Length: 229
Image (cartoon, one colour):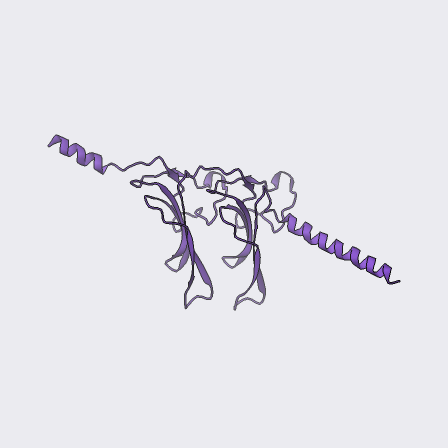
């Protein structure tokens, strides 16, 4: 009888995994963002998994109660890596719902360093980064599992034009789309840029490339004019 009681007591103990994951729900945690950023003492920290048999860290994005939300949790199951696009009849936009699975501690640090910021929280997260002395944004080592790319996005977030920079395990490509909102009198350009070298997502290289194109065109026009005199 005593042995049986001990067994029942042992079974009731929460199994503690050696795995640590970020665990949050954007409905309850304001810092549970799509891409985690450094917020000092308010930064989200990975915690040991208490889910029985936990072997995977999961991140999901989707629609919860008509609101776009993020969840991060531990799981005993591999939920895979995929995204689906959701179209709601009463909404004027298409949503992307994703699930991402990894099996290494959230403390994993990539050898890649990227600029990581969100213009909603960092006033120096500009379209093109500029030198602001001690207030300048600095690239930081990626902690995203399997990070191989630096990403920069521009788009509409909560009806406000914003910039995000982050690390990613996925190549999100390089493209821009023009967005037209019925209640706005202007058209917005939403872009994503992907690169794969340290600190390459500053945005400065785009301005440099544009300057080079303009300079080349100017030289060509001067040369063309001289040859036709």
